[in-house]
Each structure stands twice: as C-alpha cells, then as structure tokens.
Amino acid sequence: MSATSERRLLLVDDDPIALKIVTALLRDQGYAVDTASDGQQALDRLAVYHYPLVVTDWMMPVIDGLELVRRLRTVEGSAYTYVIMLTARGDDHADANHALSMGVDDLLAKPVKRDDLIARLRVAERMIGLQSELLHRNAALSNANERMRRDLAAAAKVQRALLPHAPPATPGWRAAWRSEACEELGGDTLNVFQLDEHRLAAYVLDVSGHGVGSALLAVQASRLLQPVMGLGSMLKAPRREPPFYRVVAPKDLMANLARKFPPQWDAPQFFTMVYLVIDLRSGEATLASGGHPSPLVSHPDRPVQVIDLPSSAIAMLDHADCEFADASYRMVLGDRMLLYSDGVTETLHGDQVYGQDRLVATWQVLAGKSIDEALDGLLADLADFRQGEAVVDDITLLAIEHHL
Image (cartoon, rainbow, N blue to C red):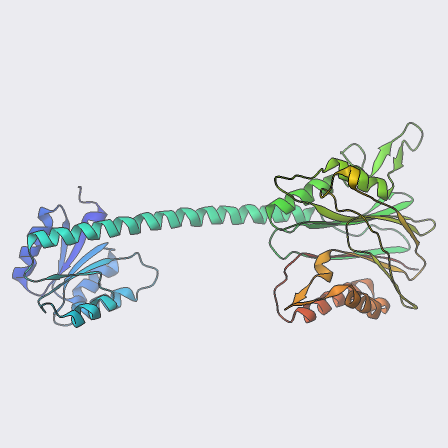
C-alpha cells in the first residue's frame, strides 16, 4: 500500500530506543511515521495535521497517554482518530477498562511484538476504513438532503406564487385570506378572482396528506381553476353566441373534476374543495363542495349560519358514485362568508379537537371586526387552543364580505 494519508500515523513515546524500534516495525508495514516524545508534542502535531491513527505510550512526562487521548476526544467536529496505546502495566483489567473508557481504542503490551503489532494495525485499518466510508456516505447524504431542501424551497416558492397576490378590486366586495402550512410544502391552496364582469369566484382546495405529492396534486388542480379560457380551465365552457362562453355551475365543476381525477387505488390520494360564484349584481352566491367543510356566513346583527354542502371528495370514489349539489345564499350588506380547510376544525390540543362549534362561536365574536382583524383573531384563537403544540395540518382561511 502506498504512503497515502490513510497510511500515515503518529507514534508517541518518551523512550528513544522504543521509539526507534516501533518506528522500524511500522515502516516495515508501509506506514509513513511521524514521531513525538510526549503528549504535548503529539497535541501540537495533531493541531496542524489529522492523523487517522495514533500509537502512543501510556506513561510519559508532561502529558501522559491517557491525558493525550482525553484531550483528543474533546475536540469537536474533527475526524475520528484511532488510538492504540502501548503499556508496560501488565494485564491489569482495571487499568485496561479505565483506558478504554477514556477513549482508547486498543491496547498493546510492551515490549512490542511484531505479530501482535501487525494484528492490531489490521484491526485499526478496518475500523479507519469503515469510518472513512461512513463519513463519505454521510457527506453524500448531507449533500442530497441539501439538494432536496433547495428543491423543496423552490417548490414551495412556486406553490406560494399560485396564491392570489392581491384581492380583486371589486366595488362593494372585499376578500382576504391566510394560509399556514404545517410543512414546507403543503397540500392546501386557494384563490379568489373576478370570473367575468358580473361574477366573483373563489375556492379553497385541500389535498390529503402533506409534502411533495400533495403539493403537486394541488398545483395540478389549481391550474384547471383559472378564469381565462384556452388554458385548460374548467370554469368556463365555450359557446357560439356572445359572450362565447358560459360559466360552469359549481356542482357541474365538481362532477367534471371527479371525472378528471379518478381514484388511484395503487397510490390513494384525494382532495376536498369548496367553490363559489357570486353574482355581483344580486349578491347571489352559488356554492358546491367536494367533501369540504361547510362554509360559514356571519353578520354583526345575526347568528352565524352554517351552509351544509353534503358531497363526495374528489378522487376518492368513481365519478358515477359521487353526488354533488348546488346551494345558494343571497349575501346582503354586512355578510361575511368564510371558506376554510379541515386543518381549522381538526386542530388538536392533546386529545381535544377545536371543532365546528368553537369555530362558529369564534367567527360570531369576530363578526364586528374588520375582515383582516377577523382572520388574525381566528388564527390567534387556534394558537391559543393549541397552547404551544405543533400544527399537524395545513390551515387555510378565505373570507369574502359584502360591504358599503
């Protein structure tokens, strides 16, 4: 074997005769040998060069072998050094156990015998080789994790870019939202936009699970929910007469999505969704759900109303087995509608669940606040309920209000 860095070692002994004899034995085995006459000299050498292998005497002046090993083991972040300790202390098991507990890897009796030394060196080389392989694999894993972290950060940036940048400028109407992912990549998404000059549309979509798979499905679905025709959008259907399109009814959209996303039995994944279209002229809101939590409508002068929308989640059942229906609600001045993901009602504190009842009560209390204050107040109540426990599901809130 060539005298690479793996075959270079440090020999430490205060006895010049022993140093010469052992050096000759080590060089005969192909090692490049550096020497030190005590522990302090050894530490000085170790400060400027990493020796994978150190062979050191136990009893030495200034700093003995045990203190050398103790200091060597306290250096954090350095590559491991295998230590063989030479001792003339006989077969004292207590001494041997003490040395091993201090960080010595192997002991060899003095005077050193050639065959014993060779056997110990072979063990050392195997251990050093395994340690080197482990370091290389850890470095490769660290690099892969860093690449994955960068990829996830880039994917999260793309996902955030799908969220609306600003609420639509629609006179008499105001929208606001909040979105908190429990992981870097979430499965929730939302949008609110002007569908045409007479209609405002909005949705909240929640994919089962978390991470890359959920985020990809959320992105795929959201690309089909764009207000512009000709981009694969499912929100408008072409027609020959002006305005050359018709707005797809919310229940029909759900049925179309169920056909577009059949169940994948080999890798089950589904999403829930609530979609609404508001006629800006009349305030009539038409809603449909795909297995999503029921929207709430609050007003400062009336109790919160729950709009129940029984339905099936998308991609959970064959489309022929799914049932969808429209619900209508006429929004008057002061009405505020809340769409939200199940991460809200399923927020946990121990074995307690936040639940719809608390959500309704909180949304009622916040009815007199501004729309942004109401959303922030709801997030604050969720955090207060958790009492420091981690968020276990994405939380998405979208509010739309009719105002003067």
